[in-house]
Amino acid sequence: MKKIPLIILIVICFSCTPDYTIKFGTYKYVQLSKLEYYSLRLTNAITTYAVGSEIVLNQDSTYLFTTCGNIIKGTWFTKKDSLYLRVLSNRWRNDSLNKFGYNGKWPELSPTPFEFKIKNDYIMKIHHWGKDKCMEKLKYVKP
Image (cartoon, rainbow, N blue to C red):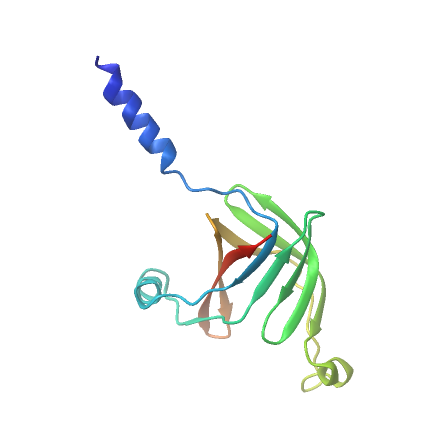
């Protein structure tokens, strides 16, 4: 009889664990609620957030990551609670920028993979944008 509460507690604990499995398909930008934004601002010093991003994860471990200004391609892998994106190519979305550059500069390849934390149907990334600390949140939308 004493084992029943213990069994119930164990079942509850395992049912509340987050899902760190990644799903193949499309992840799109999702706007943070005001509560999320202010909470992140207080706890992680987030001052801005990225908008309009989209990542397509393919079953062959390749991806396409589009932002407001770039088209990034590469390979992806997971480790524990994180999704990592290795960058193989990085181009401007604007053809004239690809030809002439932006103030003589072109997008660079990141030497280290981008890291997103996996949170059930979301992936999230905190990174630095100049002096600002930026948050990016994408939600799984379709296979």
